[in-house]
Length: 267
Image 1: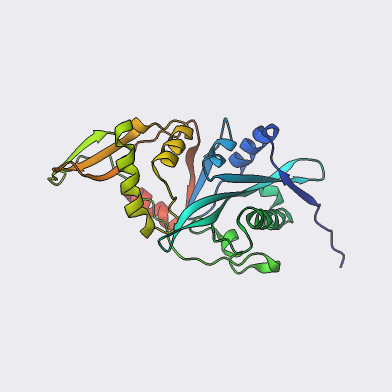
Image 2 (image 1 turned 45 degrees about the vertical axis):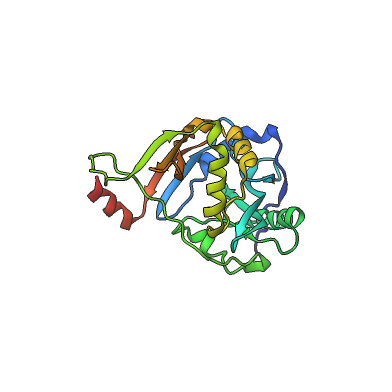
């Protein structure tokens, strides 16, 4: 029996001229899991990467014809780990064209991003990545086959929907909600520095770095934040209403059989 070698791929740093190909790649590579999700990254694929850390690299895999068939990103960020500010890495945007899955592209991208993490963060830098529940292809990579990095699951992130189809009576709360302004930034940063250390991989922000991140985020402004204050004026919490349409748009492509039943009942 004869075998045919898979066509070679090369991985290089992405450049601005790759933007159009990367936007097409994202559209062709929905995240597969219990919920299929497609992320539209137009018009600027790189906009999201620029927000993900103090330093970042985006690698693209090309086939022998120079076609972009995959990508992966790494970003360095200062985050809380076990309550302490720590240099960490975040890995994301692992995408491979459907026609090239099962070939060398995913492994080549994984090796590339491992080296980028070492280069930016050091040999033993803690590295975070997220995997959509039900993503069988990524689950097969958890054990580190073929010498690839071993992945250890340590938490589950749950997304909750806020139903708007019916009104609900809100519990009485002694809180006043207002929009944030420049004078609130120091207090927001102080609250963050108290609550963030108990959240693994939460970013380390002071007033200056928080303001810089907000200013760099498309569609986000300090006035996008709502503040909840107690009766004595102390800040109890804050959240932002962020329209990310200029950054990314999320589209559900399919549901697993189990969730399809739940969706039908909910609808």
